[in-house]
Length: 376
Image 1 (cartoon, rainbow, N blue to C red):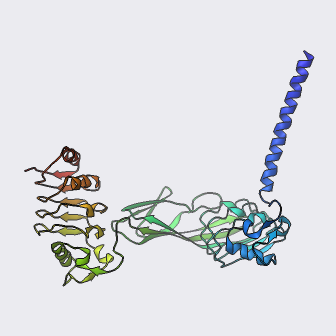
Image 2: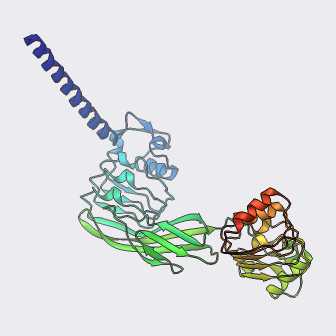
Image 3: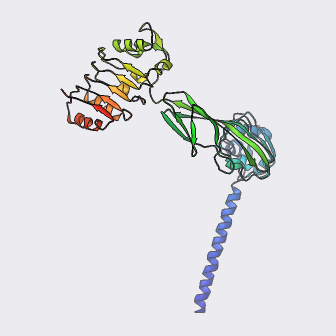
């Protein structure tokens, strides 16, 4: 009985010892995360080539391939690398004795390597691409901080309605509200929302807020720019009307719509973007090639022509009303019309259905708000 109890107590002691050792090991690993093991090349510790070059200079080395130790990194207490085209500050977490750091005028977006630099007192991060300040939360010794003029640019696809989650966050993790939103955008529940009836090249918003960091107050401000690219095809340069629209009769319609004199007059994508309505009934049009560039087309009346293929209409996001009565539409063309979910009014009188697939397509199209169809 006593032996069993003794073994049980021994087992408990052993388990507790294992747990304590495990915890100590875990804590030790966390501490070691801010120091390098052994001597390593500068450019291995600092992957950004421009940052590595500046570290090389500070340490008086000849090459970024020279090896350095943790002890050498801890000698760096002042580091100035403003306007050096630095994009990543990975490696600075090992410079644990830093108290004065100037990284202004770079392209830095991630400042997480600064998180454990608790001896930092002066920090200049002006004119960068910073959106999240969470890494500064624990830097209690900061007495001078500059976070002004941040600018961040991102490419996104153009859509009639764009919703972007606000990604600007202060040290406490809370969102920094925008104080200006371009193009009549609005801010609701952490989202920036734009309703864009026509394509434009970019939208943006500005932010600015007085925040508390360490022992000081500073202004965190800047701008976020979303460059919009169109998934619809665009002409790359100004071209003659009849080169963009090979069908002679359609080219004449476009010429008149844009108030040009000749079919050989050159037009640009910006001019094509202005076309919102085309009415070209009974014009002996065979091909609508070129219409894919009418990115803001809303209303299209092409009844009583000889059109078979409607693929140029596939990506016209604003197209809501189409009339294709009495044309030579194929089953495939009708199937493409089905995919255009933005259509509110579709008229295809006198369409000859030649397959069960086409008839099934029509059954789906009938569900639209306004659908007209008759079969000869």
